[in-house]
Length: 346
Image (cartoon, rainbow, N blue to C red; front, side, top):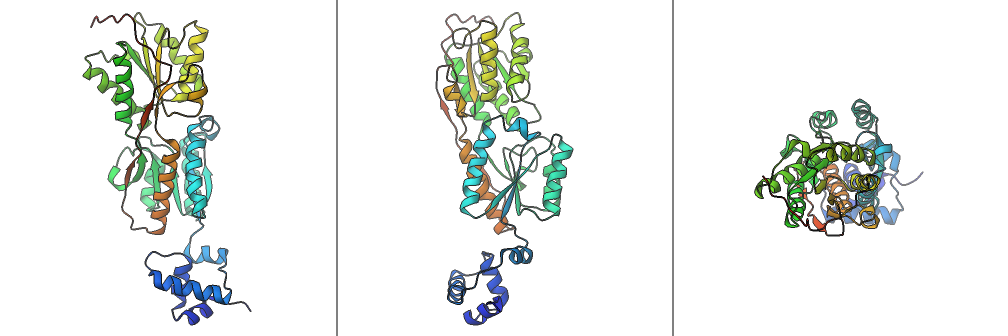
């Protein structure tokens, strides 16, 4: 018969429940007690049974990660592998595994998350997106289940731990860069306006235009998916305008690459015919031609911070909601140039 928790408790002079708490790394056990119990475990050659342990304290040492809409499309965007790299780095260090939840539709995603929660498969969940009136968020709040959002929650912002950039400032700074180069007709191409990140980046774009006394025109705002195919359709609409833009603020690097390809097909060149600025600084933005001027949102760090926050929350349910803002900076590359002949006819 092997060594039991009771044997360890007796040797360490504590209750068996204390030994269980030490094994589960319970925050309320003092360091001195932890040391004493661990010493007894080591001396007696006691190894906790992981399966029995997870049943006892309901911990699976695993984190659920929820992708937006269909994962096959999302994973084409280098943002997601990079944010996952940040999450898994911390998870690995803390001995947690990752479980991905995906779905083609909102209903499928909710179903996947419900399965994770009801079957006790994960200890907590990270959402890699933030959208308006999200049933997944409402479900997790109702269940009082630990979760963290990468992005900014659309409501109940003080109750939800989230890791984000200041996307309004990012949108404003990158638009001001185009204005400083003499561009006055500046368009915005963004993803779905259900996504908070699009709304915030567009608000920053609007602020920069208003501060400079430039027009904020409906026809200069095009919304489409954060993906290649979407960006190309948007270009057709913009260049059909009587006064096409000379500068573009594009909400995502992958979409920007689609736009550059599209412009080439129309015999327009970046930055000679059109200056482009973008967001995310995914690794492709540096190797594409021309390399993109883009807001570096430090994607890896977003993942690292989200995983740290979630694991802290899992270990101590009373951990208060936090807002962590990861700073951004702008990478100035060669997708922009001065607008030679500004036509200020406002």
